[in-house]
Length: 375
Ligand SMILES: [Zn+2]
Image (cartoon, rainbow, N blue to C red; front, side, top):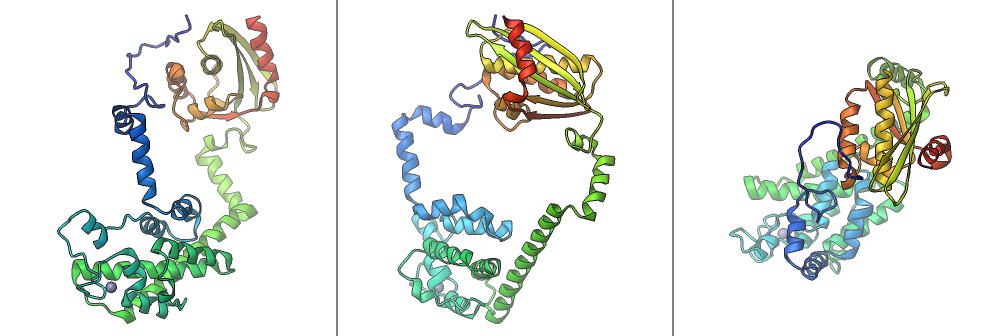
């Protein structure tokens, strides 16, 4: 009785129970084929390849650095050892030139440490840049650690954006010179390279500055925002649902009560935007879980609102997972998939729809209606 039967015709579907989303993935297939122990071994081996400080930096600080997306990705590739360097090609037995092209050496392998720090060309670039770094002094640590140390130091300084821009610009320029030599055999022009380095850094500083200004403007709510508000009101009215700028919508609140005996009930109220209660509804049904009952309560409330001709809806539920799943931010819970699909089909009929979480304390009325129905 608790299997939810969709009101509209829909085909049966097959799903993979070994992943939370119900979709088959090669990863979960492998994990099942090899035993759990093998899966564990494989993942820990992968992790050992990188230094823990590097992993931590990539997870926490890298993506908020004041540099462009292109540079963040580049830095991430250096820190995770994924740049296609000669030393990596050698490990894989590829037929490549394994030696450093920047110093046209026939003995020095192209390792990350050599290319970006110890190579004579790299040293000249570091020394000649605005930062004046003596790269010979860092020879005792690997490149990832060296980069993280410098960036951590710059982050503590007042002009961190300026310093980090010049630092990453230096790494980027060395990489550009290496690629120009390797793939186009272009001769190295150190003078123009240093100018490009400064130009890249300045462009990045400028872009960051503009971004900070735009963020500040957004916070300050100045004249610009008023015209922006007008634009939204005229062209994207559905963005305003639920905000103070919208006055023409219906508030839908719902809640469910559920017993382990699979009995369930829903209660809902429809309110005008001024807060006046227009309608109260309740229904009894069967559900296999509390979540399924919550989803069904939302479905019943929304179909009721639609049948009464309301098309601007601001819905709220005290079930956070349901809000996430309807908004598409979380994979659907398997035993409520068909109800969630029905909800999604219903949403197409509304002109505007917004859903938000409301804490249980603000949802007492609907809770009482549902409790009353199940008793
Ligand atoms: Zn070299």
